[in-house]
Length: 434
Image (cartoon, rainbow, N blue to C red; front, side):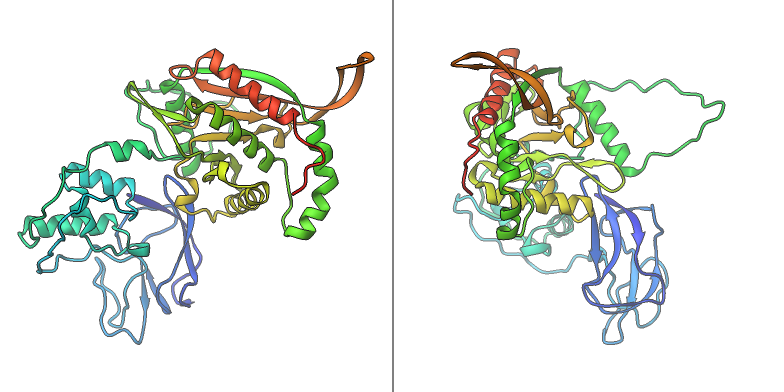
């Protein structure tokens, strides 16, 4: 719906090449870079850094000597001004759209939750949606496309469609937004008491992402009754295995292997055995997710966290998981994640041990029902049972914790799930080949 301009990489008078990054923007889901779709000279900036701009607004003008026409903007522009970086919503064109008759067969065409929501509210059926021309990536129907279509329909320039029932809320509920998107709660949140600053203090305004995280966390706590279970795992075999293969793996695959891909692999296996932990709740309806998409909390350069998602984690081998984990972690640290990289997560993993913490009580990433925290791996003296009796040995130990929504996951299920994760970690084969 809107985006915040974080940083202009170009200033007025600079030459801009095709596909050159012009600015950085932030939405409620992800920070990203915006490339220029024209080559020319930047002649005017219509918005400043930190301005919040609705989708479809003109934000800058590039002069293109080869352009035959200009795109009108709210402010006066040079005579040779070319189309803008972000196009305005085009005026309706008087023509007739002749849709095809629906066959009742589902399409593989992608529609964003926003487009589906508009279609549902306006009574547009899926077969009618299929007829729309999309101007987005890969022909996707954007918000601008569907709004223009509705305008044409009001003017009587769209032929009637023989279609099935209008789109219901079900498709949207089945794929709720993840990561930093806001989750609305039926229970209103009481405003916090006013804090009066006095004495030797410094006042620092939250940045946009920190505000979103704060809102997301408060709503998660007010939505889900949180319960946290803890367990300790002996990961000596895993630590020794990684130490043994990490150099040869990097030389062969060109990738560093961390513990995270193994954690993701173990979690994916456990989720297949306990599908109710891989779920969401819509009112009193439990939505069991067939896909296993594991999110992993990643720190950004600003110190905030974002949760990129490893799609179909249960279908990837360890090499595939390693490459995807590294790709998403690198993109997250460099503000290069795409919106699809942080959507559709079904379960979240957070490594609090990477910051030195022994354990944590993580907050559920709504609308999921559980989140697993991995603590720091520490050498400890541990009692081990052997054929010769009990002995004390130095082992690599790790505490894991899982917070879960007690409306769906009770103590028995939560305990069984985390115990299964421990079993899988402790049964790791130190001679495993990859």
